[in-house]
Amino acid sequence: MRIWFNKTFSTISAVFNNLHLAYRPSAVTIICTHTHTTASAFLAADESYLEPSALVGQDYLDWCLEFCQRHRIDLFWPGKEAAFISLHQAQFHALGIQVLSVADYDTLSLLDNKAAFYAALDPDVAQTMEFIAVDNLYAFDHAVAELSRRHDSLCVKPSVSVFGLGFRVLDTRRDSITHLLKGVEYEIPLQELRQGMMNTRSFDTMLVMEHLDGHEWSVDCAGRHGKLLCAVQRRKSLLLGHGQEIDNNAEIAGMVERLTAHYYLNGLFNIQFKNGKDGPRLLEINPRPSGGFGMACLAGTNLAKLALQAFKGEKVSPPEIHYGLKIAEVNTPVVLRDKV
Image 1: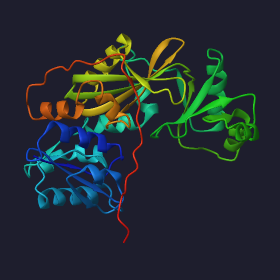
Image 2: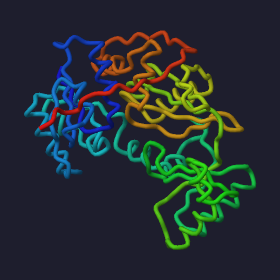
Image 3: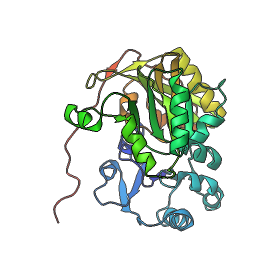
Image 4: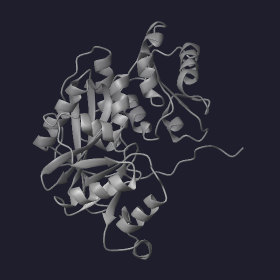
C-alpha cells in the first residue's frame, strides 16, 4: 500500500516510524511531501517530494489529484487543506484513491474555531471551561468583569490558533517590564492589553476564559468513524522538565469516548484537557497526530497501526496500556541536507 502524507507538522515523523515498525517495507510505502527541502519528516519517509507552496483551495486540490495519479497513491492521509479535501473525497474515490480524513468538512471547520466549537458543544458530551467570546474592547471589559465574579484568575486565547499560540494569563498586578526582567512567560498585563485594544476598533475573535491551573492531559487517539479504538492519556508534570505519565483518568476517558462518537472522529487525533477547580475540562480536539504521539506509543500500543488496520477493515485487538509509565522525549541531532 502506497500512503501519501502531504504537508503537515514535523511531528508526523513519529507516525512514519510506527508504521515502519508495524509493516514490512514491501507492505507499506510512505510518501511525504512538503514545501521545504529541509522538512525533517523527509528523513522518516520512503519517498519524498516537494509540493508547490502557493497553492490553496481548488488549485491545491487539483494538484493533489494529479499527484495521486502520478505516484500511484492508494491512500491519501491529508494534513494541509484537510477540511477542503474531506469535502471532495468523492473525486479521489472516483480514481480509486482512498482518503483518511479525521472528520467531515463541517466538523473539521468547527474544530478549527474554538469559539464556535465551545458554544456548540453539548455539556453532556464534555465540559469546557467558562468562556466569553469577544472582538472589541467593550466586550472584553464586560467579559472580564463578568467572569471575575466567579473565577480568581482569567486567561485569553485567539479563537483560531495552534500550538497554544496567543494563550496568555491576565496579570492584574505587574507590568510588561517586570515580565521581561523576571522572565515571566504566558502572561500579559491586563491594563496594557486593554491599551492595545483601545487602538484597535475590532480584532479577530478571542476567548476570555477561566484559567485552569491544574494538570494538563494530552490524549492520543485512534478511531474509526466514531468508534474509539484506543486512547492513551499523557498527564503532563506541573514542573518543567519532569516528563509525563501515562494516566487512566476515568472522567477524561468518558469524555474522549463520547467526543469520538459525537463528532464521528476517525484515524489519528488528539484531545487535550486541563484540570481546574471543578475537575478536568476540555481544551481542544486536534484533528491530527500530536507532538507527543511517539511518547504515547511507548505505553504499549502502536496507534498508527491500529488506525490503518481499522481503515483496511482488519480486526483490531485492544492493546494493553502500561499505566503509570513515566515518559519523556530526547532530542536527536540530524543532518537535514548535505551542503550544495
